[in-house]
Image (cartoon, rainbow, N blue to C red; front, side):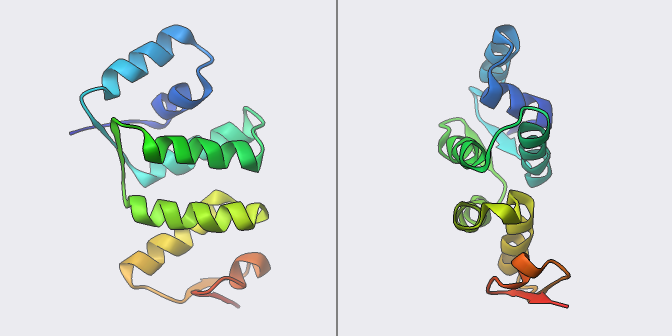
Length: 126
């Protein structure tokens, strides 16, 4: 299965360049894998460069999770992270994903100096 890069994900979501969005859709049509690092980078771009708000970011992640042609790395961890992010958007999606990826790998607690993240089950504020 082919894989996708950050900029391809951004085109699929933002659709701000019709030709690139069409090329991205054509590339993923046979099926494509989304590495977590590309997902996290894309979320950063959408928030920082495109100014998307947490609700829009959550909708974008949901769209990627349900996209018929995409397979997200550790989709169950992404789904769990999305649940945390929707409840506490100030955490940031990447922090939620770090916690859930750590949980899936069986490496808890997740040590953090972040007070908000430290309040979640499985995290330990230092």
